[in-house]
Length: 233
Image 1 (cartoon, rainbow, N blue to C red):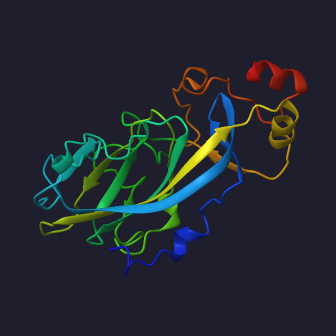
Image 2 (spheres, helix red, strand yellow):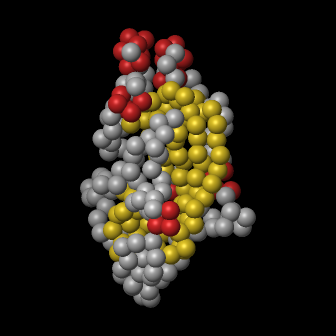
């Protein structure tokens, strides 16, 4: 799949070594990082159906939110980051075109909600279809960041009149990073020095203990010197 895929929509979103990144945890603040290494890989699920990654899905069939395993290697969650010095930038595409993909981030929390209504089973909003993000031409709208110790899940709905064998391709930039602890540099970054700001999940608050996972507290955007000092202590 790698040699024939069109990655033009996502390549401009990739980071480079030495880039500064502010991982924004809604309702908490940001985790300041510097990218130190990167690589690229992909994984193609040949068939998605039923309650596992095999078989077909009937017309109007819905596969509920679940982690994506790799059964051949006894991997329960292929996209769980287990190294606290790594972060994943994920994009995905699906075939056939009518199939709709819903994101659970974390697994138990739906994304793509409206202000007036949350995504539900067979929701007419909050999805990405194969028309929007084809298997071999992933769209940047699917961009999803996965830091250390967060579970991500997907649900699938086939609204077509016929059953379908779903192909799901995941494209991954893997990054090594360091947590920034220089107070003046961090203060400059949260007050406008160029950096990529990445909000995890969306506008809804994300339940995640930054201090336990990374050793510092999240820094508020626009923080004062004293706020930065307390967060990094």
